[in-house]
Amino acid sequence: MDKKAKKKLCMICGIVEVETTSICKACSEKIRQEAVGEWDRIKSEAEKEIKKQGVPPQE
Ligand SMILES: [Zn+2]
Image 1 (cartoon, rainbow, N blue to C red):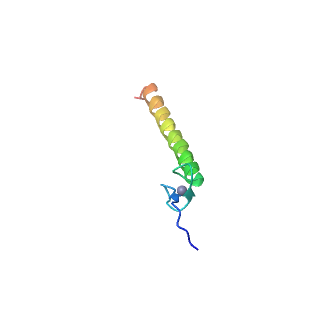
Image 2: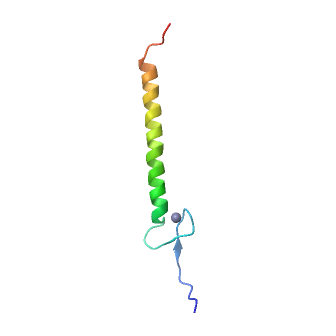
């Protein structure tokens, strides 16, 4: 018997079933890591920009 219960699927991948959250564990972990990576990129770029402005141009 195939009882079709209302299963919620992960809103990111749409494959993994989730119960209490809307995003599965793998996707939430991925998003978290991407957010960290993105933040690192933004931060290092901002630091580069600050250094560029802090250093007076040669010539
Ligand atoms: Zn997922």
